[in-house]
Image (cartoon, rainbow, N blue to C red; front, side):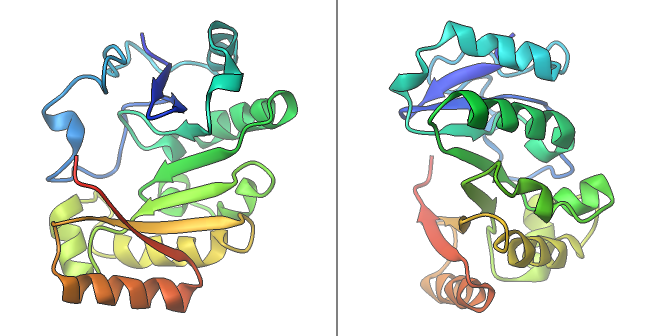
Length: 199
């Protein structure tokens, strides 16, 4: 099964297929892999030791970042994520990014932002829209409409511990007025706003 896979010059970590959201636009609804990665549907969730063993198969000097992002929400396996991030920081000169829906606190039932200190260089959160109700319609989060507020709280907290926090939307999916509102949200939180290309 595919645990690590190269993509866009970075090395990605596929920890889980679990996610509290069922986004209407999720890529995994219509594909099994990312540009020749092999199927990202896991037979079972790998242990931290299994993930760490996979690094021996790759020339780590070839990649710009290590990215926790696969066919699931990486903070569903928070303890494994943190253990693997510790290993990477101790053994490779490689920035670590976590691509997340920002619902780690709801998933894990506690304040998780401080745990990323010294382990992640970038936290990239999918904002999708500036509107709470529209966010719930798009993501269909099992935690309900309050997921949007939890995402913003997490973003505001994790910026205290991680040097680069980014909230993103996808180009062409919302209006320029909505993008302006997203930019304002990010400015108020003290984080970066990014419009990422549609895939």
